[in-house]
Image (cartoon, rainbow, N blue to C red; front, side, top):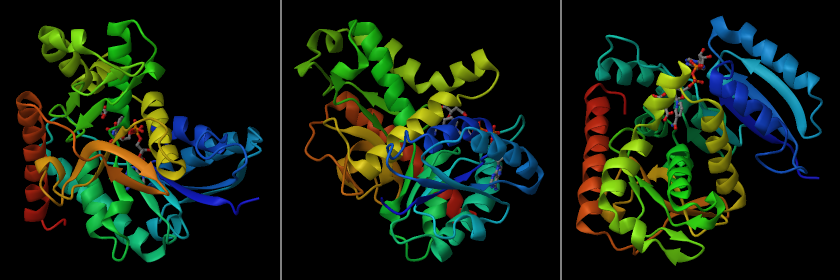
Length: 327
Ligand code: NAD
Ligand code: LMR
């Protein structure tokens, strides 16, 4: 059998953590043959709650679970990590300015990036889920020493899955029959869910794309604002669907994508005019443990403006954290 894979999850006692840990431990991430060791990182006040979750993991007697360890020190939690899910973050509270949020998260993701650089395994793969995910990932990457920036990614897979679900409902097809949907840009309301290249059973969706009212006034805002709609309905932000998307992202990264492409926020190399050095969502494939941005897609004027607007927001966030000395 393969050696166990060490997986660190931050914010382990939170809502997403509660859904995510059981999926990882049950083999949904790396398959039924791969044993995983879980390393949970929490703030000291939440360690007791994390211990409760660890008791439930123990009680589940998963055949794929090796060990569970709990830490309140990032240096220890990331020691030997092969995969890190950075879920814990400072959520926006009433009366908080965006700059307060960015600086509070700088205090979390800077030290976590450093701890990853100091102790993670050579093949470390990092997914940032905690918001603002793209810029938190950038902060972590910029503190991580020798770890290549390509190992730091942010989650737009939930937005991608939401787009598939909306299109399937519109077309009356199954989500599994859809391919070539893209989320571009930031995990925020400026994101651009792009159906231009989408196919259903391999065929272009010409009639659906011709319905501009549906695409522009229904589909795009529904996907971009779905996070807020879930908060409104549940009284808490999406948790199980976010955990499920995190599993999809890291499973594809480790084992390879099985569709034409998916969406992942990765370090921009300037592709499609997105400024170099921001972590932006692109159409991506994964092979041999590396994400690659799909090249050569035609971008029409409508898409151009939407991609540029979200890229501009990412550049602004980058400038803001740079001005605060966080990157
Ligand atoms: P939650 O408040 O239930 O849990 C967050 C946990 O993080 C808490 O247990 C808290 O103690 C812990 N935490 C805080 N600071 C920490 C630190 N420095 N180190 C370790 N742990 C720390 O929140 P949740 O519902 O699990 O959501 C977590 C984050 O994910 C939020 O920022 C949320 O906005 C974000 N989110 C992102 C997406 C996405 O698609 N990218 C989707 C849903 C939610
Ligand atoms: C989501 O997309 O569900 C979350 O990012 C929303 C949020 O603000 O937590």
